[in-house]
Length: 192
Image 1 (cartoon, helix red, strand yellow):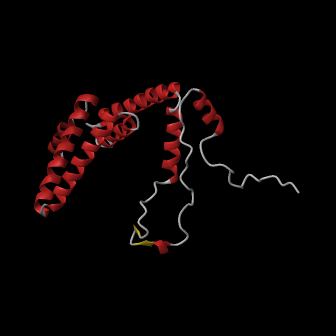
Image 2 (tube, one colour; image 1 turned 135 degrees about the horizontal axis):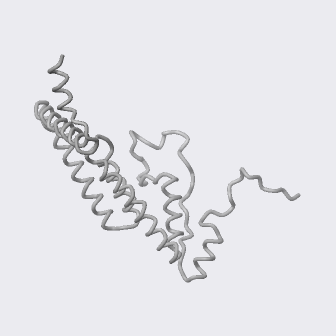
Image 3 (cartoon, one colour; image 1 turned 90 degrees about the vertical axis):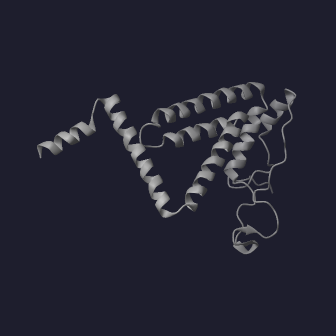
């Protein structure tokens, strides 16, 4: 009796698509065929203790990260794909960093977008990966230092930050939109 496989059945062979493998091998490039096992999450937390693995195996990256990594490896296996990926990453990172730099003076996610743009560039460029690591280390060091300080020092640092943000917002409104908030507030206080 012959039965057809349903669309729910898992694929028989794991690994990169055969068409992509043949095309890249035809051009003389090697494609890794080993795939990590896809067991999913354990049914219970019996093999874990307090979030630490008991059996000594390093934690596996999430499946979406494995898929992205495999897709990027397949794209890099083709010379045209490698160049197109570099160009796409460069343009996407530049757009995000440019928008982030434009938003730095305004209250909002300016620095967050700059760091996100560095993260995009870090996919393909080593200098961006090093700069992102440098930024992470210093931001982590700064936050650790601030949390060790007394409440009075944290209040002073928060006040300085608020004054800085208020000054940037005031100057941005004054010179970009022509609205002088301080002059309008002083005029309102004088008339009422």
